[in-house]
Picture (cartoon, rainbow over the protein chains, first blue to last red):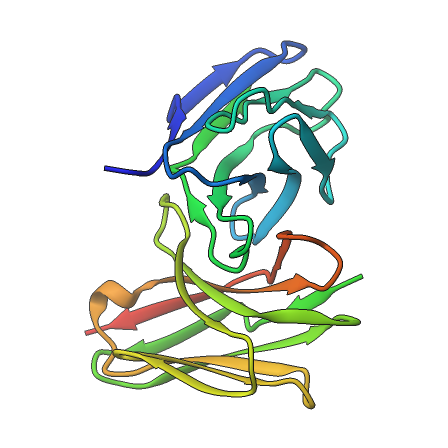
Amino acid sequence: DGGITQSPKYLFRKEGQNVTLSCEQNLNHDAMYWYRQDPGQGLRLIYYSQIVNDFQKGDIAEGYSVSREKKESFPLTVTSAQKNPTAFYLCASSPSSGGYEQFFGPGTRLTVL
Amino acid sequence: GQSLEQPSEVTAVEGAIVQINCTYQTSGFYGLSWYQQHDGGAPTFLSYNALDGLEETGRFSSFLSRSDSYGYLLLQELQMKDSASYFCAVRDIGAGNKLTFGGGTRVLVKP
């Protein structure tokens, strides 16, 4: 079955530590995205990548970093520079020509203690 | 920049019809998408309007009017499982595949 996987589902970290969230897709999609969702809020774009070895900042990129070395993988690192990292993080992918329909992973809920 | 406005919450009973409005401000966009998200879950794609008019997919329909900068999602024959948050999103011209989401409308279906 094709889809997007994110791991882990729940993640706890101490303040000041960097943490990397995994996102893998086997849908053969060129484009991948990372969103942040706070309770009762919409999705805000952190970073997106339309092709391997290329990515662009979204609306709230400060304190985050990404890499896109393989088509299937788009890991997100939440650095200690992110002032309020506790949130629900969602990864998505889409075909290069069909960005209006994005396919989402199950999400990672990050809690920084 | 872009902004999308949706009502924060709507409550209705089973079998009823609910309309979720989405008004937007953007200089140019390809179309309006709608997503559903159950509590704690991932958003799932519902529909997309590239052109003005009504798109029907089973119990759900979506409408777009570019001249009014307005769209809506219509949920018919409401079921308990329709209790979820619904988001509109636009893909701006010149922004590649980037989507901008509205704040979401929480729909609560009561027996």
